[in-house]
Image (cartoon, rainbow over all chains, first blue to last red; front, side):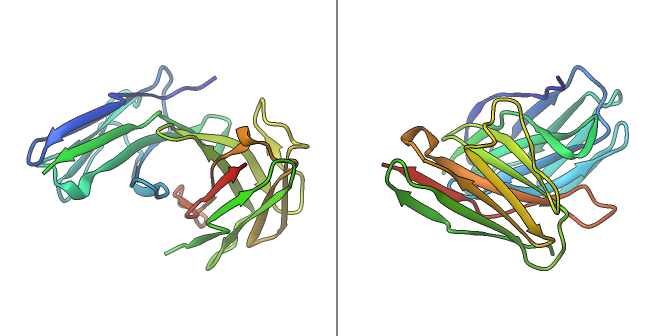
Length: 112
Length: 116
């Protein structure tokens, strides 16, 4: 079945360093979404990318969708302790536009 | 924005009892809701898709008689964990898709179930 691979599984950075998490699929994706889950919390929608090569920014966060629509990345510039959490990518199932296929997530820890 | 509530936020029960978890869309209607479970430090695992007015669609490996889902109205879906055992202890989260034209999913705050 359709799968979304996400790396790395964990990332530990010093505050102020950059952070990137990557998602890859063997099949072309119609879109990809990114969510953030704080420790003890629930996933919160960050953004959706739809177009090939799309780049979107939210303050220090930059989201990219690959030209072939098979990969995506989330880059955080100058991390802060408030960025701590797990970042998930998710893509809609090919046969069901509402069902999401989830990456395993990247857990980010930031040392102050 | 769309808000999804979940009740209870946590529950501790004895082995063999049943536990009901409610998921409500507070300011929008949801003909579809999704139920996930999440183990510590792991990803979300989709258990089933709840459909208003019809039977839920369960993912492979999820026992429908064990995890009863009812979607009786456009704003409420319930998940009942029947005859709970310690291995059912987990974080259960529901979500609902946004309004037509958006693909965003809005998540409830989750229910932490501990079965003793």
